[in-house]
Length: 125
Image (tube, rainbow, N blue to C red; front, top):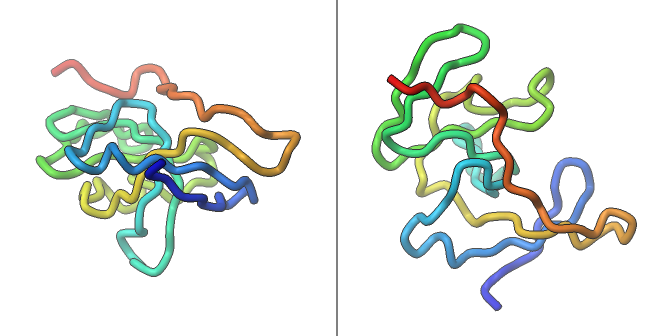
């Protein structure tokens, strides 16, 4: 199995799938693990909201942004306190280290990581 364990900021240990890196095969709503664009020593876990070529509406500024080739837009599920693309913009796909597939620790939280999208985020320009 091509995967590894990663600890999220909430203390969950995640199983990370890396096959998706071969061709950058990601989907809207995936939870991805990536190097921080501002500090490459730090690892971040966020939900992938937009892919290259997508148009996204920034919920705070209401600007519509086109995601450049080779980049993606990520956001935390807790939007009121998340440091994410709303602060640092689209991130290079080269910073992505994998996709979270399961929570494996603690035992009471063992589950699959569900793919989901917040409504109204992708614009249809």
